Amino acid sequence: MITKKQIREIESFNLATLNEALKLAEQRLNDALKTKEDLDKKSFSLLTIFLSLSATFFSLPQIFKTFESALYWSLIIAGFLFLIGVIALLFCLWPKKYGTIGRYPDTFLQEGIINNDDNMRGYVMANILHDYQESIEISVTSNKERIKLFKIGIISGIIATISIIFIPFFWYLKTFFFNYSGRWDIWSVDNFRIILINLT
Image 1 (cartoon, rainbow, N blue to C red):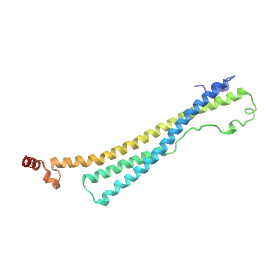
Image 2 (cartoon, rainbow, N blue to C red):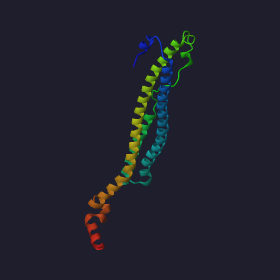
Image 3 (tube, rainbow, N blue to C red):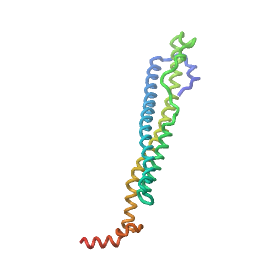
Image 4 (tube, helix red, strand yellow):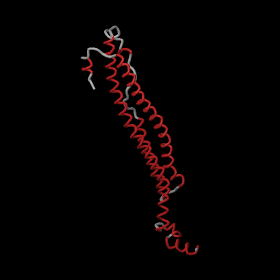
């Protein structure tokens, strides 16, 4: 890509080409800004949900006194995972650099620009097109960083949901077959075999 110094050295500009290029550049930048807007909405919605779930899962063990149990640990782990999701989404919502569509009027309201020929107009348009390239790159880079953080939040929420189901399941499964807790003696392997024999 040519530099602004090289643009100054160009003697004549194709205005039709520049107009079409500016139109396409604005569309590309607008797409990046729409992606930013979608990320803002989705991240804020998930942040609200995850924050509520995290607070709920941290408070439930205190309410129901479910200490030293599979349910207790699943709730605590899920609460921490949702909290990780909240932190990721907060960073996702943190302001980042983005390009802007259009230019301030004073770009053209200059002596030697507004009252000059089409060649000067082409020079200004070429510089704006050059700036758009930088704006698009900055916006796309910011979106990529935010999408990574958004994915971390989503994954944390999925793992948290899975932990609520599977941690108690495997805990009770372990107790059921291996008799690690005196509370579950009736479900020891030997007693389970006796139950099966009696049933048959």
